[in-house]
Amino acid sequence: MLINSLTKALCAMLISWQPMAMALPDDARQPIHITADSATRNDQTGITLYKGDVLLTQGSMKVTGDSIELRQSGRSVTSIIAKGGPAEFQQRPAANKEVTHAYGEVLHYNIRTKELEITGQAKVSQGSDSFSGNRIIYDMNKSTVNAFSDNSANGQRVQMIIQPKAPDQEPAQDDTPGPEATSGDLNNQ
Image (tube, rainbow, N blue to C red; front, side):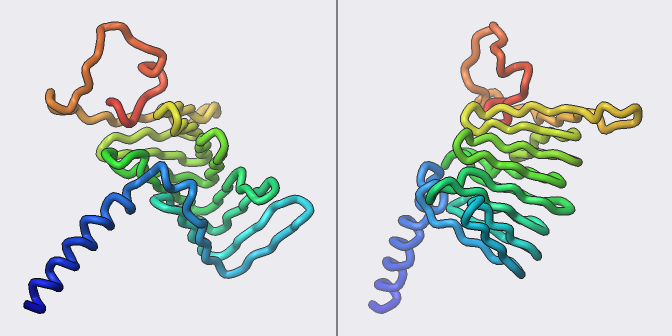
């Protein structure tokens, strides 16, 4: 009897836990948790700088770096800037999508526009698809990736790896290429 009650309670907990862990629209309403070795806050500029093996989490979003700078306007955080060797960003774009991972020397996430700019050995991957270059701009609202090479003579070129999808995984498409065909789309490839 006790085992049945525990099993039912555990099943109920697991069923209710999964949607909350993957509920992306709720990420922005979750509290931001930060751990670091030190923090410095300037109320006049609205900038808080965290240093030393920094970890920031908010819902499914996770950002790590040697330092993370939070910029605020009033009570709202407007941007997150992470620096590291490399700094890392991850977030589940939707409950039915794989986690997106981003790496680079500098990650600048504009919370209002949902745009992540990665510079210095930049890489974005989702599942087995990946984009890399010197600079990448990942627009989360449009699910597009724009990758740019280094302009120097021996600079890093843009590289993309897009795995073929099984016929049952491909979305219905017309034969007309849209603007997203030129910029890359992690979620619809």
